[in-house]
Length: 281
Image (tube, rainbow, N blue to C red):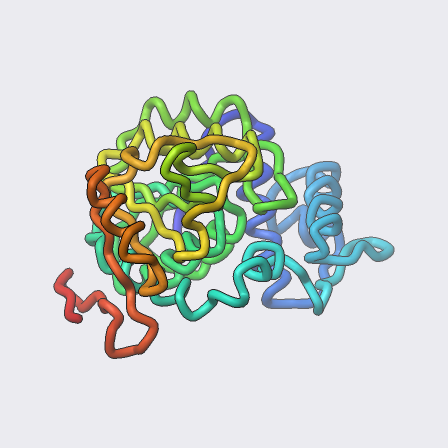
């Protein structure tokens, strides 16, 4: 897998931190000297990255290096908020992943449902993925034949995503065939919203770069409003949600021109990508 970082030198921290997490998944302890050699970078850079991962709870700093925190909250920060809808999110992820074709250049938003989409992309080959989500980057490190363009910058504890002024400039030079877009709230007046202003800016830049926008959100997001407005609902061509959506809400979304796709929660209901790009229901 190739990881490329968009933006300034500071943004390159994203790649190093993703690589560090991959290393600590293999071994519980590394010295700072070892990590400098493995990452081909300075001791100061390694120490800064370890301090960031320590604040996230991924590692514990010890004399001369760092060790893996066995109770790392890396995924709990993203997934913990959605435990009660986990089955629905997995179904949505599988369904949305089946809408992606091999070789596409796609954008993947931050958030637990978007992460589920990435986890179901494994049968696809030759993908290029643009993302600002640290958990998505870490997940893609495990997948071969994927090029990752990481939009780096300042790491926000929630939703574990990066933001930087350079991200919008990078995205203005890219064309994404599909964007997997998460949202905290779907309101018929306010549109899509989230709780982080910087995250909202990045979402808008991703939307502008994409030819097709697939919103991934379970039914509990409908009717909710958050501080930062992202975009009107018509910015998304497709919404993949679960069977809990009310019929009147589905009709209102369709009236706005949004295709509503219902993902099942039983294994037999999931769309599965097959080798060769076909799919079955």
